[in-house]
Amino acid sequence: MSEIQEVTETEQEIVATNSQTAPLTAGDRCDSCGAQAYVRATLVFGELLFCLHHATLNKEALAANTVHWHDESDKLLAR
Ligand SMILES: [Zn+2]
Image (tube, rainbow, N blue to C red; front, side, top):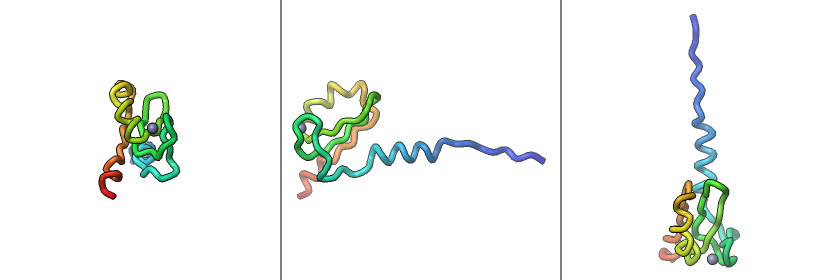
């Protein structure tokens, strides 16, 4: 009698996904100007935070290297 043990990477994927989609806080600052960040760009070479202004400016230029684009700009519209 033999048991086949399945090894999945599900747990690892969940951790990675959580860090990409974790909510931004008031302490998160735009890497360009220091204003409050509303966008987290997860790139193939690292991570950048942007205010809405710099997110708009950089989104197209970074698109080819973007793994995940976490946009909380709707928070600005909701208040
Ligand atoms: Zn900025």
